[in-house]
Image 1 (tube, helix red, strand yellow):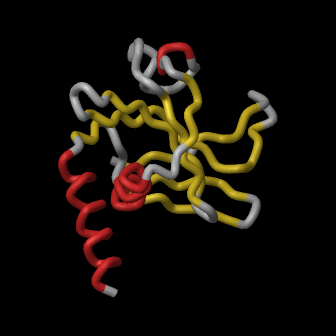
Image 2 (cartoon, helix red, strand yellow):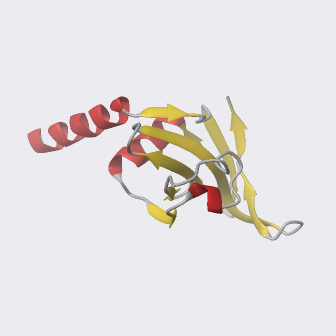
Length: 121
């Protein structure tokens, strides 16, 4: 039990040391199973846990909503089961994590990609 408490404390300290830019208070994502909600706390905990997939080493190479100008900064994706997926760029030199975009798992057939989540700021 003590080790778990120390781990949670360390993850919280890591998340609080990072500067989170552009993250909405909530993301509401369309899922096949219904609606998924991702909160700011969810995103910070997920980023701190390092459960991520590298999308590209250069966020500017991807067609994201908010990170097209971030050259040389890696773009990551994290899928939270039952909630949705969000992508972010992490600049380790400035310790800044920038929200890039998000999506559910239902395809918007008008564009051929998963539908974006609704952002509430």
